[in-house]
Image (cartoon, rainbow, N blue to C red; front, side, top):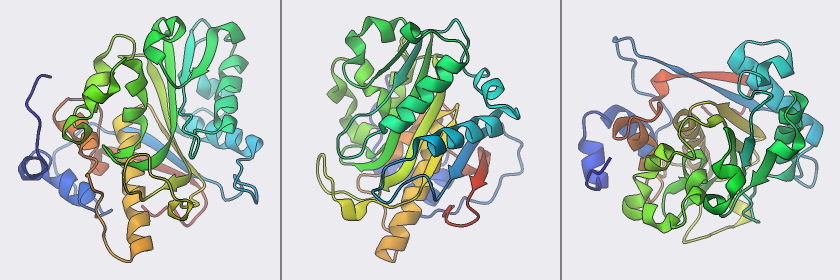
Length: 299
């Protein structure tokens, strides 16, 4: 884990990541040709519903819940929502829901409420469920949680290319800036922390109105929000993030009329797989389950 920082040039030249890096990191949304060698795969559910937002772009709670249910049923093969949720959360769990409350683009209270509802619906007492974003490292509840659900919106990011599920757990440490070096290349190290490792049961990337472009720290401009009406759900945070990144790159291509790579590149997603052995970023190894609208997925 204590390896020297990897530069962008070294990253692209590395033959172990060249196929993934050149296909996605540099802007293309098309995966490289499949390898003949059989490799393990991971499931990711991508669900869209064009009715999820009302005219004011506020999520409709009942549709958010329906979308989450459909995603977990697709991942588990169950036909009944609560049976599907029981694959991820047990009645005796102590559940921390890690949200993201950035005021300009948050996880949304509708997603938070839907997650809490389903956790309680399977029998977890309300006293054993907590939703929080900041200063997780000093919260005894989260430090003692047996299960975590990680949910946040997708947006471009000044330090890491994109802010997504891998980065969302950075508030589990007291000095998050220590993970900002080299375009946040080593964010996967966070997932080795005892408070996180093996506890995150589900990762949810909120793609209702992802921010696909920004300039500078904490940058926000509503003209760079894309109405996508989606959620990306999976157990593997790397695969969820890699899928979200492909969508962001596709949106950028449509908006700017040409391939426009992120600056800085979101290399931490691919280094999570190739350098840290966490999850799968290669799209050829992601079994993407598309649910909902017949058009507009972009990938």
